[in-house]
Image: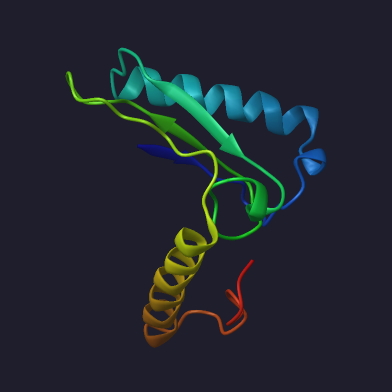
Length: 112
């Protein structure tokens, strides 16, 4: 899996400009060529994580290349239990980043 992530924190898909969309297309094309991706999919979750499988409100785009003949299904929504587990995992990661000198403002204690 590859990620296309904006330089700035964007939570609303409406904030993306025409130029952003051109850059997204360019980065996607570069990933396909550089890593010789022969097939796969693109997934972009946006908006409130209560309505998709994300953990925090932000935009990023996943470029997914399945492996071989194994089935791969991408979740588009989660139940409350999954959201809680994912947010706890995110906080563990946040604490590790803080321990390495990361910013204190990253990710509040209570998630969506």
